[in-house]
Length: 378
Image (cartoon, rainbow, N blue to C red; front, top):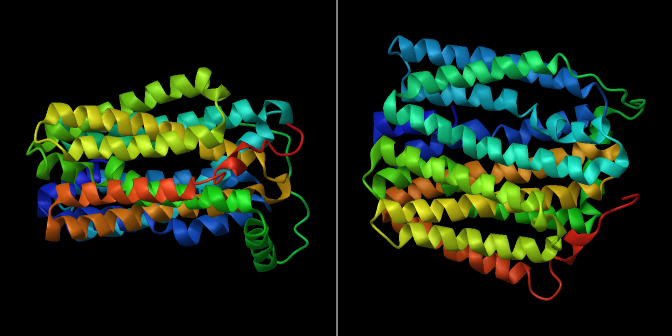
């Protein structure tokens, strides 16, 4: 669904601005909904929050399938349904990221966080790659239906999950507890670093890895749905390779050193894509981007979660997700508008240069050293 929607919008409008807007309205609800769900995740059953969110996702995607099948899925209706689906999803991210801490013993938490991060990032890469192949050979209808089916399967599987954790006494008013979580984030420099890194990578890099891939395939390579499928597939293969590496020797590398290297590698992959009119070279760029994005996601998520007090986990993870999910729509919308004005190739190159410069500035001296702290009890 996340790839089929911009593909269909691009077909219907031939506008990078519309493509960016469709991603913007799907992800911007996270800025409001995710902090609320993070506070709720520290006050109530996290599984129940997920069940409600997934149920709404199933309903929304079923409407998308029905409207597409009847030929009534217009660009404006896509934006409306994307907003509704994004609002439902915003109440899932924080509980998902918080569940690992209550499903495994503390001594196994680093491995559990790494596995969750890998599955989260691979899902965002391999899933769109599968959808892209459907788009190339069948069309968006099957991709929409497959997304609805995946939501339904997830809903069924979630009903089988059981754990012993119970939320503490909600003695504080909701808003006071929310403000306490924000205060905890502001007082912790390592958390603030993770937030800055996540937003930077999402705004300047993730926008082109996910939301604007359809525009890249069309504007840079004139390749249409087939090119979109191939680029998404290479992104997914790169993510898989990154997951294999971080599960083995990469897990032994200091997170501060790894994060600096992979962020610059991601920018290099973007430069490869912009430097050629040949789609096959673009494959290499997206492969590099997928691998680097996987390593970045696992590194930052692991560093963040290991340093949290359990009392604040849901709220802090929600703020982190706001940085991540807020950077994507903002970067996508800005990139789409600028792409129509200046050309997508030049905009992607500009984003790559900004990403490399920002990361280099942040990494000066011991700028990333805070990522190496394993927190209490690990």
